[in-house]
Structures are given as C-alpha cells and as structure tokens.
Length: 290
Image 1: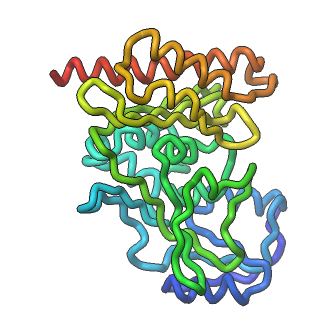
Image 2 (image 1 turned 45 degrees about the vertical axis):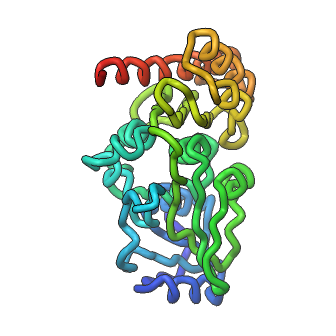
C-alpha cells in the first residue's frame, strides 16, 4: 500500500517546527521515521501534514554535562549511541542496549527520542529511561518543560505531549555514585519485537546500591516500572538472596500475555532470569576491573 496524500514541511528551526505544529492540519513529526513511515504505508497513520525536523541543526548530540547529567538530542540516532566511545563509561545501561535496538538498518536512521515518543510497549529505550528515571524535554509556544518518562508515556503509543509541543531532548539525571547496569532482551530473530526485555540501572557506592531502577519491555500494555524490585536492591549489597528477591519481584510486576512467542509463565521466567543475569554481569565486570 501507499501512504495517503500529505503536505510535507521541512522547518530549519525548532521555533518554525512548533509554529507548524500549532497551525498545520493534523501534523506528525518525522525524525528517523522508522516507526512512522511503515505505519503510513499501511495507513495505520494518515497525517495531513508531515513535519520533517532533520534540517534543524544542533539536535544530534549526546553528551555528559558538567553537572553530571546526560543529554540526548532529538536527532541522535541509535547508531550514534552504538558507536560512541564514551557511552560505556558514562551510561553503561544505554551502551548495553544500543546494539540490541531493532536491526542495523533501523539503528542508522531511528532516533532515541523518537523511539521513546513512539511509546511502543516493546520499545527498548523507554525501559532504559524508566530504569534511569529519565525525562523528556518538550518545547512548545510557552517554552520548555521536562516530564519524567514515567508520566510522559501515558499508555501504549500515547504520551502527554501537547499537539503543539516538540520533544527536543532526553535527560538522564545525575548519579550519586557510580553508574552500573545492563539491558537484555529475548527475540526470535534480529529485529523482531522483544519476547521480553529487562533494563537494570544501578547507582553504586562501593559495593552498596545507593539507588536502582528496573524497566520491563514487552510484558505488559505499556513499559513497566518494576519499582518494588528496584526498592529491594536499594541500600543493600548484591548478595544472592537480595538479587533473588529483586528478580522475583520483577517477574511479579510483569503482566505478559501468552502468544506465539511464549506463555505468560515463560515470559515471567525470562524476566527473573534476566534480572539475575544482568546483575551477575555487573559483578563480573567489577571483579575483572579490580
């Protein structure tokens, strides 16, 4: 199938893009287009106006700030993060997830912020942002506002972005200790939707967990914040019984459905196994570094 007819706009500034969002008929923003274009071809989405933001300079960054936060611009591609030489030191969870997003073709054009805004329950980056307690910065006619991702994603394929707001960047807050973590997902083949995925973010002070976050992919109607599982790690050393409790609570937080990818019980088992495995990988890396 072919997309329905649409008006095509290429603003060169954020202000111009916001003006188009405010005035154009039924607009949609195009950044990477790896989700939007297939939906348009199948006519699941039929915007009257397509606003291509790729000519806006200065939105393709990812960087650690002097205050310790980390910022990712709206045109930063998955591949930019995958190829980064500094990301593993700054944000090990994101570095772990980057090579697992979709396939190499999608990673070349798809964007981090666009993926979070797509709000797919099986999206990898949304789970990472939940685990890291990150925020999305929305800019509109009244200025900018930062929305924590746990409130930003309001449901499957739904966000709290106003019709005239553009998501311009993602912010990962300052860690109080040393960042550790990882991402694992099970997929039938490269590029397939996740059967189940887990993002674990640890904020460590020596061998004690200052803070933790756990996000779950593909095991519910939206990205899941396994907050009770994360709380079980906070303030503790990563002893086997502590890790086992967190893994059990993460599995309990999931809400999977049985389908052609596996039964609900199987997916819960995967969640539990991945939490344990990610933490074991963190501990193994720590031992090797020592």
